[in-house]
Structures are given as C-alpha cells and as structure tokens.
Length: 79
Image (cartoon, rainbow, N blue to C red; front, side):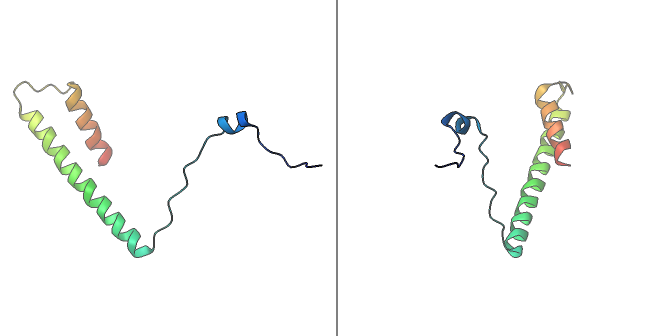
C-alpha cells in the first residue's frame, strides 16, 4: 500500500508558482552588474530631472499635471 501523499490536480493548480532565483554570480561579475545598474539609474535620473526642468520652464506649467506628477514621483523614488 502506497501511503505517500500526492497532491491532486486542483491543489496543483491553486499552489502559487515561484520563479526560481537567479544563480549567484561570481564577485567580479556581480560588481560589474552592480556598476552597470548604477550607471543606468544615474542616466535615468539625469534624463528625468531634465524632463522636469523642461516642464517647469513651460509657461503653462501646472504641478498637478499627471505627466509632471508622475515624473516627479519617479525622480523621488530614484533619489
């Protein structure tokens, strides 16, 4: 008699699937990856700040404008 528990089809369909964690990188590769990420974020911050400055320079600038508010929020999140 087999007493091993086997999940039913319904239990399998309800169970959350987890994505496997990425394999750990060697320290030098991790450092290279981190530097690339930092460079990307700094570039993104620079361009987002430029967008905000351009929006503020417009004569019809409104801080409650959704585009401006989203850009300001994204810049704040980065910093």
